[in-house]
Image 1 (cartoon, helix red, strand yellow):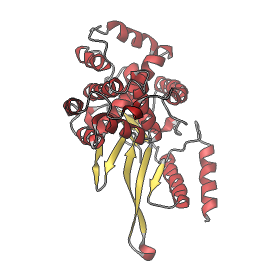
Image 2 (spheres, one colour; image 1 turned 90 degrees about the vertical axis):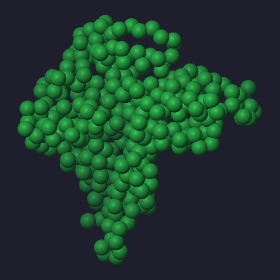
Image 3 (cartoon, one colour; image 1 turned 180 degrees about the vertical axis):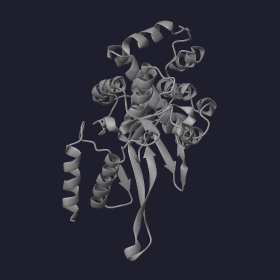
Image 4 (cartoon, helix red, strand yellow; image 1 turned 120 degrees about the vertical axis):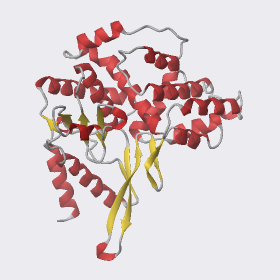
Length: 352
């Protein structure tokens, strides 16, 4: 089969799948190959996603209520992610959402794969969202779904290397980027900025829930009740303290509290020291959400290095790959060492 024939065949198959938009289900970038091979491999990876969605022994069919929630969330997703920097919604089908069966004898094995004891996960390589609904209300199930859908739409790249020689040559792929996280070369299990990536993802999830859940029939009453029961703990007018206040609320819907608090302190510091460039905390936050959806890390790196000094971008990346709370101490030391005024005012001022 020719190269063009294979591409046309894959496109033809994808055009008949529900919800197709411009951004396919494969990686956004494949590094290490020429453009034609990259285009072909991206479509091959997208095809794998479409073929990898059969029910397994670990899961069950979705209920009508679960399907309704999935479609309601899907409908609202494109406008939301465009607001926070995405150009296009990645292709996603309801078949990619897999509800794990808590009554299955295999469930214990499934739990070991769910990172950090969370009830959901997303695999970029397979395109599968897996949710373990045991004990989850519709609102909490929808929250997990939204979080994983933010991951689905995150920038995703892989590095491809050639193995072997001559006719035995093959391509070996490894993760390079996912959202704002970056895999270190030669360390495929370690991702710099891993917890910042989860913090940005959950902050976007919270914004989605607050904006839309009251408009979704099956979520409306429970979500309003959760908000009514929420303890109103008043701190300083600070995003960091607002996140930490959730620790005092056992009914809080949102997760990754420590990660989000550390991330909020980073965004606050960046905003406070660069008010001549940004109008609000939210403007700085959107730098991170745009990086998550588009892969543009350079503006963040420049801002952090300018604010905290040379090498600080990597320092923060290292500190947020293993233990999330350490980011607060790291930021405190970076902030203390940085000068109270920009080093070169001529470069900091906005043009008149």
